[in-house]
Image (tube, rainbow over all chains, first blue to last red):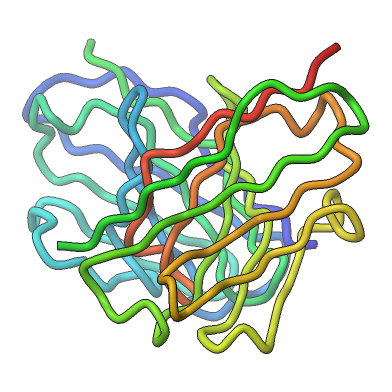
Length: 107
Length: 116
């Protein structure tokens, strides 16, 4: 199975900060990397698909990049509603696998 | 508006069975691949299974292969997960979700607890 490793596992930041979360795959996955946001007690929400495709309705402060094994999610200017857990997922091959998540907290 | 509503969760003893359902509305269910994903509260997401739009193709995580069966009834706009030989480590919130690779829409989840 393809292992997905996210870093950091947690992050403290302030409103207005720029934040970058990384996701590394244990083997090449092309651009088949998706990012999700999950708030406490809620289902995940798809933010970005195939590495950099911003989903409809997702603010443009979110962006994704990368290919092969290394990927990043960037939030250009944190807003209060962005404090949540972020998770990557590879859809290159089944079994699809998720990263362990990055918990983004208010500093 | 896409709606996915899971049901069928609950408390079951180890070795027991449960069938989860996911009722879909607001989109053409028969054209969408569907997934089950689970999450132990406070932990990460784990993909469980996938089924093609017409039900002819399925995939499973190794941890559930041979015990869980995904299926769908396109006439009833409903996705199912038959879970047999349940283990305590199957305890989790189970979500259904749409998509081929990326999972675009999710239900609210149903909690399955396996305990004696």
